Length: 406
Image 1 (cartoon, one colour):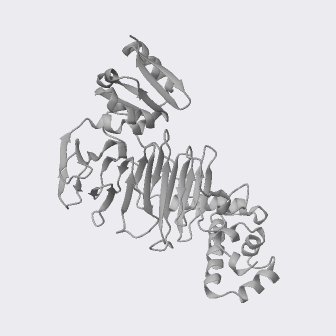
Image 2 (cartoon, helix red, strand yellow; image 1 turned 45 degrees about the vertical axis):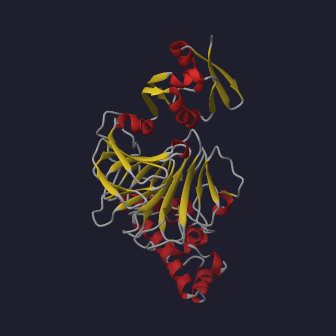
Image 3 (cartoon, one colour; image 1 turned 30 degrees about the vertical axis):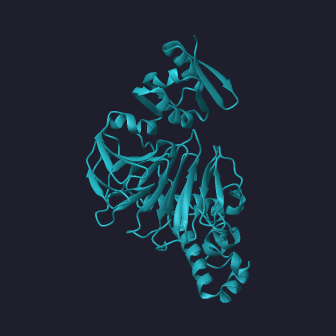
């Protein structure tokens, strides 16, 4: 094995190495004993860490069958050890407002992820992380994770992979969420930001190393550093997201969303800054947040209120809102309360992934009250419009034209 290929992931996928460690150097001794004598110090430390993992797995069984301790077995059992050793990570809190619980991720999978060429764990294949990356142009219907090297990891319905990042951060990724957990040996910093992209019509869940949960709405981008630094709790948002921030009185959590900056210690809030809105809003569900404008004008808002900053302005408007309506999207609903139909079009476009067109100014003033559920398709909504509001429709490719029969 070349020295450049000696990584923890590669070693834990190598049955010869595992047999050498489990047998206390009796099996495959000529090769591995000879290799260790020629290794530089940093590579030797990597080998020792991999051997330590295998020994921990072996020690967790009272009478392990050495013949059964294969690479697949090591991976599975080590994941279980990681799960049990990270139970102190804050879990998502149950929502106290009168809607269905938003964060339904009870199981915590502390798996292993590799970035920038380190080999990843898989029960079926021993390919590289690069095999899962795509270059632009990419399919905008997929959820994407951009690495610091500006490559893209595609998330689809079959995604379920495990990596160990090269700074020692454990990560699990599947079709619903990506979760980061800092190991005891994780480095304090990383060389660049990650980005998560959600296309129109899809949402994604992100759990950061401090235990903060973020539900990312459709057509949004979340930017964050993969870091273990306790004081580095900052993200950037384009689009909309719901935040359940892990409390840390010594390290405020900040969100930069267009011109509006939100600073918190630990709380639940929603931020929206879609370009078509012309403003950025922060709605507080629980706790306390400080919002500030580009002119450094700041204000503290209380639960049940929304701070709104219009683009190009420095004045922050604050008003009371129905938080159920604001965060309903996180539980697969969209609530309207006597809103102008024309004002709903951008939200409907993102919700259904189509382009709604109003054929006359008469439709602009139609007001709409109701609740849409994500499980109901576009046709269901259009039929509801037809029979309750007298609004007909025509569908052509990705465009939905709405009109009123005269």
